[in-house]
Image 1 (cartoon, rainbow, N blue to C red):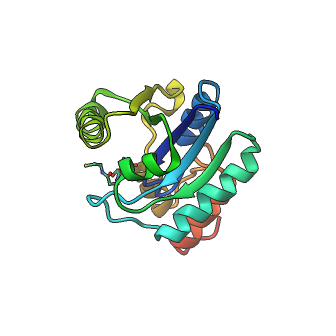
Image 2 (cartoon, rainbow, N blue to C red):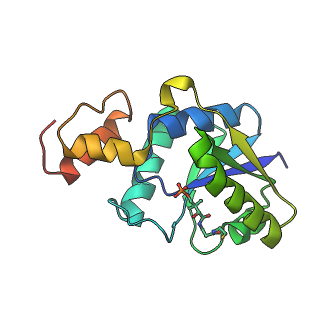
Length: 164
Ligand code: PNS
């Protein structure tokens, strides 16, 4: 069996920054699952199913044979165990991400010491990019075509009741 990593997140919605990270990860690991989970601290724009569907469509369009999409509920560590994954991938953009990521990684290590969290740095064009920023721009009618794949752009405009 090859080395499997999980790339977990809320993905509300998936952006080009996430895609950049997962492609980088796919060069290090044999297989990656993008796993849509629930962050109890976040109220999402897209429902769980909508987020999963968007990730699935994006993964299909990417066409990488070693990247697949899935979802999980409950603890990430339990999902990791079930999947026999050896690592979690997280993107680290700026210093402001660090504190939360550090907490998450150490909490996960306490629950399930056998896996590592691997932090990958996005391409600098995505350093400032976040799902929240994309939602805010879309809500106010701005152009988000350089930040998200077309299928996500369409879903966002539909959500906000705007024509593209
Ligand atoms: O994209 P996000 O919101 O930063 O992703 C956070 C996510 C979903 C990966 C994280 O909240 C998570 O793993 N949630 C599942 C519950 C869990 O295992 N929490 C970590 C232990 S405290």
